Length: 267
Image (cartoon, rainbow, N blue to C red; front, side, top):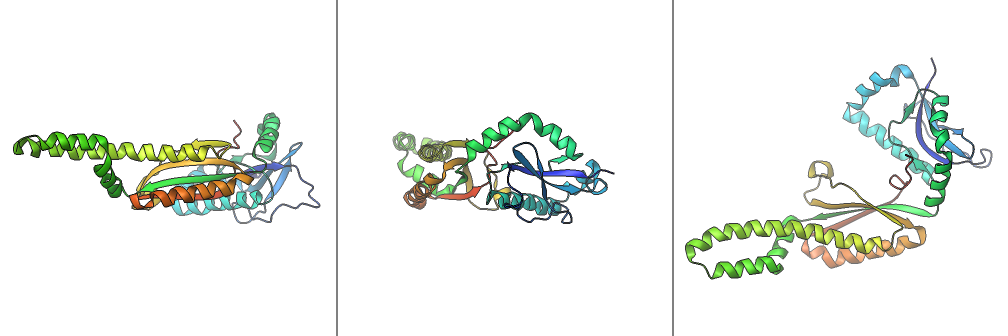
């Protein structure tokens, strides 16, 4: 039975005699990774046993969170090894073809686009920024300085004691609403400043606390494609913005460089 082919990513064609692939075991921890030449580009792959990684077997494996975590990390680590040496177009975890020919037939129509992508990502790095906040500190700052909150307080101060009690509950709701607006306003402002230093950006969905494992709330999650000579300025800007805002409960977490997961996509 023909082996299945697991695809990690695409790299430019290299001289295999002078530029060997980084040594790496495949997804099954048995077969070695190797590359398939497709006229100017190379697909970095490994073989898989169809009796172990067929559709039904793979479905069962991916229902095991431990297996999923281990193998997703393996996929990322393999791409990081490639990224250290080449521009790389990463593929999604568990991109599997029924044969080498099936893979070649699928990628063949995209060769020109892949060459274009290599030009687009050459000498660039992908970085990720996540903004978190301590909600209580943001609410405290909003309660102290927000104009709408101040107006509401002034309005309440002129009411009778009975009316004040009811309106103070509305004031608490207003502070909550204004705090949510402030989280988005603050994050968008940071993003706009960093966007000026980048050649491409993408705003992603925020993660909840179950995913982040943090007490702080994630308010922003964005990706930046940076020219390599802009990285130092980008990181210095993030550091500066963090220093300016940390006392009000804002936390910025920047990570990278990563393979171009977001800016090297083949349709």
